[in-house]
Image 1 (cartoon, helix red, strand yellow):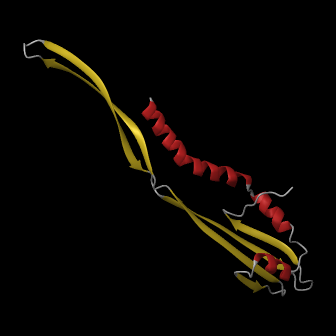
Image 2: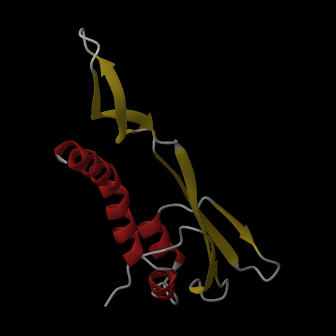
Image 3: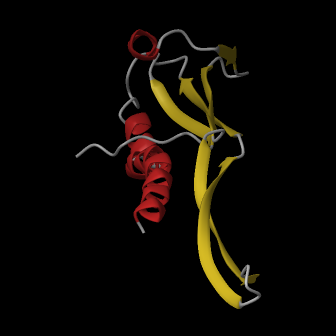
Length: 155
């Protein structure tokens, strides 16, 4: 029992960081990200650039408005760590004694097999566009796309 418990504890230790990341990521939502984006409506372009840094790209619309584009990308890699699990084998048999008598025996052996978990990676991206009106110099609209446009909602 003690060795089996150790194997289960090993699995729990290897899964703990993944579960912790899932819990933290679970607090961040697209609604929280949109809340941040909404807070920029009416702000000037220079304020946005001071806070977010220079945009990755921009273009000017036919109306003369500027669309600032910010791109964020990150790749998370996991797996590739060893896990051990118990394999128990039951053994039964008969033995013949020196005097010709027969006897039986039985027993179990447990060995621990180690395997490496598969390596995986996932890319997270967020592309955000802010439209700055030519006439006012203020941010008028925003839009985003991607699987990582999330933030913790502010109270």
